[in-house]
Length: 303
Length: 311
Image 1 (cartoon, rainbow over the protein chains, first blue to last red):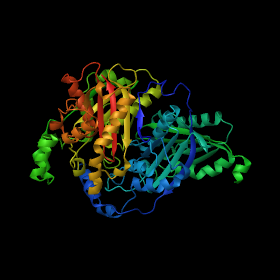
Image 2 (image 1 turned 90 degrees about the horizontal axis):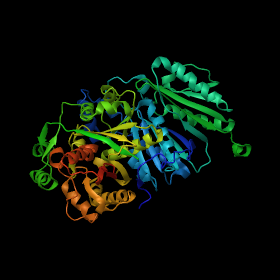
Image 3 (image 1 turned 180 degrees about the vertical axis):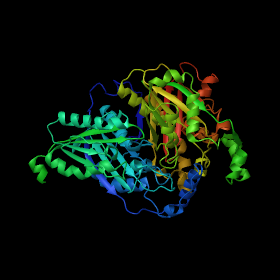
Image 4 (image 1 turned 120 degrees about the horizontal axis):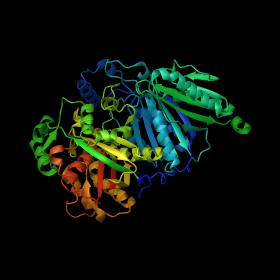
């Protein structure tokens, strides 16, 4: 049986290794951010596809925007793959998440299985706003705990091409084509240990309280200094954080994780707990995760 | 153990004769005859006036005892074929949840296995439910789509797309239709999907029987069974001729194992085929208590999948 085939039997909880036998956290081995340039022109069949799609919804394809070109998700994955370094040879599970749909009717996760020598199971989670990356982290945790995935890739992608002039709410609007790759590898020296939390359903008026509770819990259960990374859905929610970083709008799938990529070198030097959270007003969900980053030892820090 | 608690389907009553449909797409009379006589297509269910959400809701509302199941549903997943199905930020799966009063659930789309995403969704939601360890909790997996553009209407020499949909309730402790094994493999050299060069398309058709037979054997083997233990195959509704090549690769004589009763009138309903076939195979008595059976799916891109279940 080829090792690149995903084969499984059914999943009683005990067989999944969920009787507390597997790791409860994900070992973050690599975090990379790619901000794309102007992109390529659309192709003819894209014109047919999007014209038909928009027409069925009473919309018209904006020719000017079409002429502007785009970065597809395959383009973004293609740009991130060379950054995988020593993790490029194989994966057990790869997930792609986005808020906006692709700029072409493409198969970027299938493309990924072609450019990685020993690919595993690859799929995408979509139509879940800013919550999708957190759902992927939850699935990654399930797979890791079950012992069925030792190396997991998470591609968070944003693309800004919208070929109609209908409204897009601020929290979902994409202004830059961007990709973040997170590699979790149980066999690697972790840059941080990520604990995915269950999303909480709450009404908008309850969000400040929910955010404060997350902050309180984050501070109470660690000796590390805490940095809170707040997504755009938490812009109005204040709270008692020693350090708070607000995710700039315009990158609903990647903005938060780009902040992580940027902050990671500093946090590794000093040690940090990072609370990452966002609220999706359409779904009414407060999603979060914690990343514990132990300070690197002196010699390692200098090297 | 992952199980299917209930399966329902919806096939639009309005249909277009395959002859008229293919003529509209510029097929020659010879190719139309091939699709009718050899591939087995007769008519295609289409409802241009209905939305994707309309079709998915109809499949859910066709489910017996829905009201009894509803409080137990924790996840709603659209197992999607086409990469882009609505102008951003329209979100059909969230609309479905809203219309069905399922806003409390966690809902998303699972994609990139194209028409094989339905089997993937059963495996993924089974894992999620198992991890949650909440007795009686269910996931609702929806499949099927709109044939809104030429790339979603006809796949050359493979299938003609219909707009049937299905709804599957996945559980972890039900006695009915337990999942015994699942195998899937993506062959990324075909990641161009419907828009590949002719030589790559030809290579896909050449490799197709072997790739599908490979996951069938792996799924059956992972269930601890052999092909002789399989009572019926609930396939994806693609051309009949391609199935004969797959059976030959599996060493199976004849086509009695295949349930192709819906192919001529339903066409290939994206990821919903195997579940639509399940419904009618049960109703017709083809699927009987204790049967071990196989669901198959192949998605553009190209992903080959097979799942073994016990009824």
